[in-house]
Length: 126
Image (tube, rainbow, N blue to C red; front, side, top):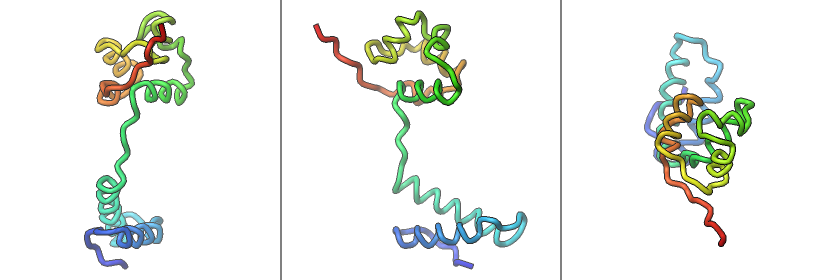
């Protein structure tokens, strides 16, 4: 069994991933399973530091939530407003309001910290 120690570089990371793969089917409540849990925690910490995943921007998150739940833009009308307002939001012509963010969070479960991020709006061509 691999000695548990901090993951300091890419080589350590690769070795840890190989050990996780080897221990993946460890029986619960065994030394191997405990080793797997600790090793997984070390790998997660290394990945958060070296491979951070940026949160999606608000419009991408809304579109993802619609698609993943089999919803359409029409399902946003009770949350955002008229179909024209929904289109303006999704086409980045109008920003989300605080009230829209609250309703998207409460009714669709989209995390508020994702929805409050700044994002670019399309410039009107006049």
